Image 1: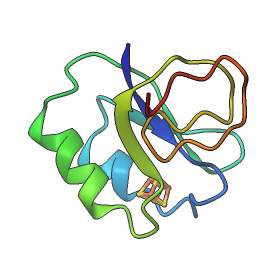
Image 2: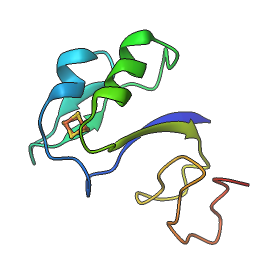
Image 3: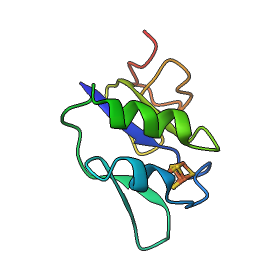
Length: 87
Ligand code: SF4
């Protein structure tokens, strides 16, 4: 399944992604971005949000959705035995 992932270790809570693409992002109680919707993943707003994130915290890609540390792309290094990212 393709999904959006926000790396909370990288997110600084600037709100740029939400300002650009409120369809996919919101700010959680910790002041960090989180994904609210994994539909319409080819939208130009989503692509712009990914490119505009100052810390590169947002990624999009195929994912096995194995754990909370999964980054959803070929750079995934979550270490899960079942992780299918990058395979
Ligand atoms: S643009 Fe990046 S750093 Fe800013 S809130 Fe969104 S994910 Fe976090």
